[in-house]
Length: 474
Ligand SMILES: Cc1cc2nc3c(=O)[nH]c(=O)nc-3n(C[C@H](O)[C@H](O)[C@H](O)COP(=O)(O)OP(=O)(O)OC[C@H]3O[C@@H](n4cnc5c(N)ncnc54)[C@H](O)[C@@H]3O)c2cc1C
Image (cartoon, protein in one colour):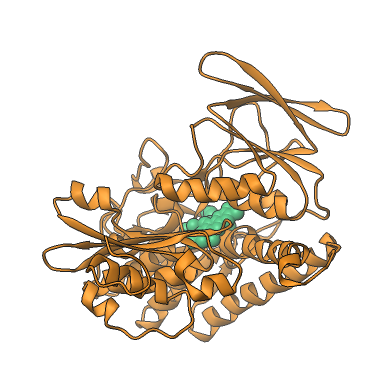
């Protein structure tokens, strides 16, 4: 210990207050562990400050403007003006309400909060450097620790986020005005969500993507719907091209790309958004002090109880790898805290849903038909196209479907793929079915409210049984 240090002791030290860390800390305290949560930046982490919540707030704002401007068919004639400063203020209000809620919840549950950057000294000691000059250091002795330090945007050679026109998603979500044009590098879920949102606000969006389609992890029929809707909104895609460099041009930028065959192209925009993925944050932790080495991609490896190779140290959320999603981080946080408190718990990756908030939304959980076959099941599949849904049509939406995959012999639901309005909400029912090992009969036999989109989940289950009423059976 250095003279002047403060020293404290805690049962459980949680490093990082994103949706992984703050949830783990609250559960640890609920289970009677003396818990300390340390955060170097803002409560709520990426999710509340720079990710899920700000992006969904802007997506909602863009949807309101776009719907109002495109409702002639419904007899509504409007030409909304978008005041981006006002939208920013509203978004900041939402974020502030949630982040202060996190702080209050932690305190109310008895979690001790420390502000600063944590680094390990040894397997039972961490040093916290408080922000700003002369703010001092603090030593915390702990029995167990949970690493929940999250991730940051991945850089690509030639594109430095310190350069003003090169934006990460975090910087884009701070915009004070809608750009006239934008080049987006990457057609993964963040690139697609932000491109769709900006196109609705009137930006000319050009997307360059090294692969040959959008959203690499999703099935072709899902990708096709989302890509063609984005194209209808004016998004221009260039596949099979990697961004290699950018240069200033007038008030904006020109982004150079190259194909595998060496063909070079250039695209102009006000700025360039680089959305090619995220990398784990471990560089401030001094993991070598506890003999913990990240894998070749920088992630901290864990078992199904969120334990790392160091007996008393857990890792959760983005820093522990895929799925890099807020609800996965929280679920892992609960497991880590419960295991730390001596409870029997383990992660079930099967029932973790994923959603993409494009137009329309995509949501999936569990196994696809192909994955089910690869795992040795004989799957049966049921589908309900939304053009046969009264609720979808009454919302002036008809594109998309709900697909349910089940084991033919037992009828147990193995997964679902949904594309359409509110798919991110609807997937919860399929996730519950997967989690409970519910059967097609359970889902089909549950009376659903009419008219709702949720009826499509019931109809897809009926379709898999050859008993659908509102669509022809397979
Ligand atoms: C634009 C965008 C949109 C997204 N949309 C969604 C979505 O709709 N749904 C979804 O599920 N996910 C979404 N995500 C992903 C989601 O934000 C992350 O999966 C989630 O935040 C991960 O949580 P975490 O707790 O692991 O890490 P984070 O939220 O990144 O939190 C980690 C925290 O640790 C702190 N920290 C780091 N190092 C230290 C240290 N040494 N000492 C102290 N504190 C430290 C950081 O300051 C940070 O606050 C989105 C991400 C982005 C960028």
